[in-house]
Each structure stands twice: as C-alpha cells, then as structure tokens.
Amino acid sequence: MINRYKHTQSKDRRYKQTAYRLPSRSLDDKFIISRDGDRLDLLAAEFYQDTRLWWIIAEANKLGKGSFTVPGGIQIRIPAINTSDISDEMLRAQQEK
Image (cartoon, rainbow, N blue to C red; front, side, top):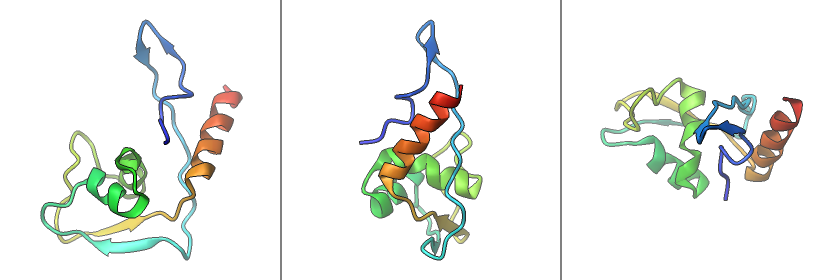
C-alpha cells in the first residue's frame, strides 16, 4: 500500500509537504460526472481500490481543500495510474532533495 508521507522527511514530528507530479493526461483517464454524496476517498476506493489515493483525484481536479466532499454535477478526471509508478515517483522526488 502507498503512504504518501513515507518518503517525506520530518522535523519535530511534523511532516513537511511533499509535492508529486501527477501523471499527464492520458487516453486511459476516466471522466465521470459526480453525484451528490460523492467523496474523494470513496472515488479513490472505487477506481484505485485504495482510499489513501484520494489526493490524486483531488490534485487532478483542484478539489479537496478542507473536505473530501465533491460537488454534484461536475466533471471529474480520474487519472490512469499504476500504483508502482507512484511509488517510484515518490522515491525519485525524495532523492532529488
């Protein structure tokens, strides 16, 4: 399972923010129209089988500023990802620091 803070250095038990590049748009991306009651974590569970990957959908759609709730009736991009690619990207980002 992916932990987006695993490779983030911390000081005084506080994590610094680590920025990861999202995958470029792809023909394999999915687009959905959100429904009332949709949440970022539930969408991640549905499309990635991992609720912890909610931040990928949030970043791709500029959502999630303080809430998992997704407004109904908007188009949402679900980036096509390979979880091992994300892990590799996390490692490279950490090594570049």
